[in-house]
Image 1 (cartoon, rainbow over the protein chains, first blue to last red):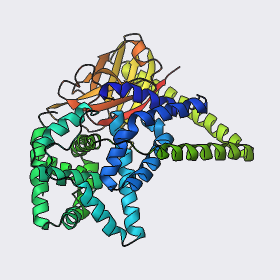
Image 2 (image 1 turned 30 degrees about the vertical axis):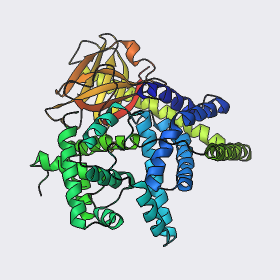
Image 3 (image 1 turned 180 degrees about the vertical axis):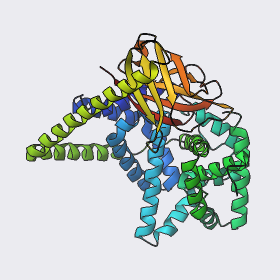
Image 4 (image 1 turned 120 degrees about the vertical axis):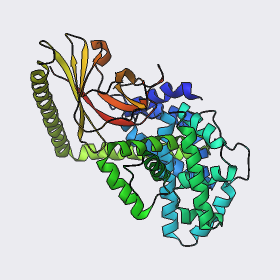
Amino acid sequence: MDPSDDPRLIALLDRMADRALPLAEREAAFRTLYELSSRKLYGLALRIVGKRDWAEDVLQEAYLQVWRVADSYRGALSPPLAWLGMIVRSRAIDFLRRRTSERADTALEIDSAFEEAVPGDAANPMDTRQASEAAWALHECLRKLESRQREVLSLAYLRDLSHGELATRLQLPLGTVKTWIRRGLDQLRGCMSRFA
Amino acid sequence: MNLMRSPELADRVAAAYALGTLRGAARRRFETLARQNPALRAAALLWQERLSAMTELQTGEAPSPNVWKRIAIQLRQEADAQAQGARARPAARTGFWRAAALAGGLASVLAFVLAAYTGAQLSQLSATPEIRYVAMLEDDRSAPAMLVTFDARHGTLTLKRLGSFQEGQDRSLQLWALPAGAAPQSLGVVDRGTVVRLTAGEGQVRQVPALAISLEPKGGAPAGSGPTGPVLFKGALVPTT
């Protein structure tokens, strides 16, 4: 699948939301949407929560939410995969918060999952094969950052972490994290402004 | 810090807001300012939109087939529960239909009042327009931002700005039709005046349930691309007859 499949995903979301259609047809559209997008979205969930069984729970919750709110996609005007990605991200962040508040020892579990999920200095850890134009621009700009700055920015966003949380999890001084984020964001701002 | 005086600082804080690293009192201050200042709100929306692309860049991996099985089971349970609820509560369903009919009645009264109002307003601008559709586009706080009317006689969309929003010098607003089951269609780039007119055929707005305005690079999104920036205003398009 690539961005040229966007119209197909949009048509599927419309069919899912169309209550005039028989339920079986709406469910068939849902199934096809799942087949086209679940690989990408599972990768995202896994990157955020860090464990396969957790990512599966998140994916299940996220798709059921997509089924219930498919009619609100129309008003979003985002590329369909970005819209689906936002739903997975919020479900994944909720999942991590719930785990942390439920059991104290989970914090430790999340930390070790976090370390597994943080790749080393991979030259290009991102995948643009299914990306929209906006994602391609972001990818080009992130690629110009130092890999550690890119990692910290990505994790801050994907897991919704504060400076302090990032410092604890990455075992870095708070000042270092703040500097990396500030410099990374400044460079990103300069670069993204060229893409409008 | 005075965000209003420094566009550079405003953009930096908007980016940190969207990334999520702006926290606590600073975050609440930013939110208060953004509610009062559409340019700041637009900067934050633009950054949220840009960063949301991060979710598309992660490496894919096939989930276990069990995930779909679990989804399908839950779907089935919800459908069964709904069917049972429908049988058990006929009175509640009658109430629902009565409420829906009432809401439909209200919408057509609103459309009629809007049409009468705009018809009177626009008579000074163009000779006897035939207003077939109206839309009130609202911002994310549901405040009216733009009144759009379609005059079938002249093939004109007239946009009247109602809020105080003014796009930056390097940006343009663009109007989109949101047809059911198809990608957004551009109706044109909106220039900076208080009342703006665009040429449109009735076919471009007929059976379109909603319109939206997005913030785009100056001159609008590349032809055929669909919207590239955040949606600032949107609203239902209502036929007047």
